[in-house]
Length: 85
Image 1 (cartoon, rainbow, N blue to C red):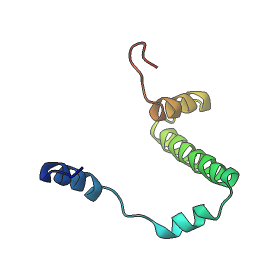
Image 2: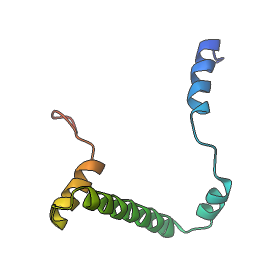
Image 3: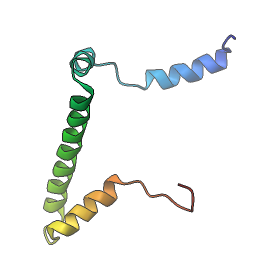
Image 4: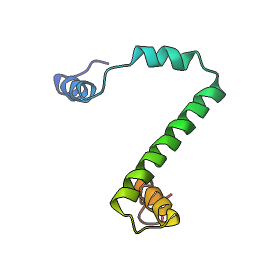
């Protein structure tokens, strides 16, 4: 099966828009156990939530910690419309 010029140009646009591969990070991740890879992701997620909570607390100083946590959750959670899951 061969690609048409149009398919090739469409794929090239997508690939050109991607960030380059971070080979150092790939090597570091490859050396981790599956559990440590998951733990690294959880830590990164926790860092992002904490940073976002800090930003929101500066922007909305009147909000309680619970309200800030809900704002963080609503910001990071996509909204699904309708009955499709």
